[in-house]
Length: 579
Image (cartoon, rainbow, N blue to C red; front, side, top):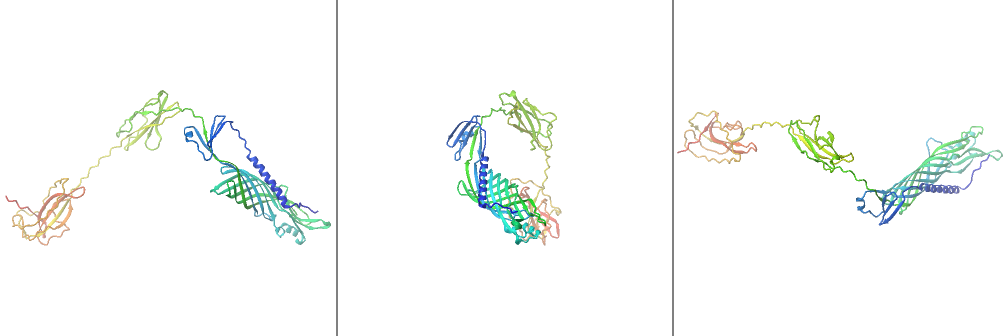
């Protein structure tokens, strides 16, 4: 039996279906814009200098400020005003057209051998600011590649099963793959500067899918063609699907934009096959099957905005609130900042005074805090009295360290208001620190050894001085500084009792200088002894304890030393003055 298929022009079918899709999209957009909102009736509406004042039947007054105008600041600074900004609203219709590219889910049969085709989507969205919602209607089709005649197709496999050579087959390709779309979903429009914008459109809904029509027959007896394989659309064409569209648009003018479009779609496609899995014996099998269908489309997008409603700043004048109950701040009368001595068991008495005209309606909230940063009261009480003493069970820390406390007083009237807090503080002193004994400082002296004049003999009348006499440590004046040592000019004198004889030369050169705590003369260990007996001069000055500077001369005298007896130092007494 020979099957016949519609031979209507493909272009005619496409134009009819595209027109139906566009009409459906426009009708759905009108339904989407229908809004019903019940509002109070308008009593009056006056527009002046771009400011529209509307009074409603419920008593609300609304001032709408158009772009380029501003409301007098005295209105909302001296009134109970709620300020709000209505977002810009507009409609956008976008037409997308380009090349549609199909793909086949991995692992499924290559049953349709689809190749790229064309698509045309039309969307209408209503935007509130950057976010919108709308409807999509569209059409797309895909051609059938001649590979369906090849060895991978079911035609060749069925013919081989029946033992029929492919050269004896008659191939026919009647219709291509077609999709009709009707979906709804959200959209986002993001401005990219002043000239570009990025639109992202996600839609979901119904897709009417029609599988392609192709197959192969072979001549049979009595002029009837025998079907080897036939693929046709299924009766169940309506399937769920989804579309994601991204547009990069360039603003040609205020309302028109042109740019690039990329679309991804996915759905399921049911189809019917005749002759598939045919067994020997010329038994034809009819089978219903479903495959995943999707693809990526690339093309151009043309967008037009209309029905724009500019953003407005709205000031709503509300009725004044009822007069609040005022709570007056009490005045503290107890001493603030008082410090109790260490070990004191005394506790402060807290006193305050009401500043309200009706103190009989007030009650006071007292809170005591330890100044440790915790902010948690250690004691609190609500009272109508203006004096409070801490109970015995409230212990205050009075330890070795300082302890500080502060307290607050607030007034309240019948629980309807709470005044600001008035605060004061007190504390306990720390344990006195013991006074450490002042360490006794040891006096220091700077001594110098001058001279080194040779002497042949010492004719002292007294006994040899084994140990130098001890010099009394006289306190030097605090404000008197040591005078510089005078240069000694030796003079030749006759040898007399208690002096050295044979002094050949007297020198004022400083041979040695050091600091010591003992001002008594002693030959330094690190100073070489003279080669022969000699006379030296010894000078001692006290050093200041603060800056170690000389404060005054303590002693100055000459002494005789014999290198053979270094420990037998003899002091040469001064010559008595002549009367």
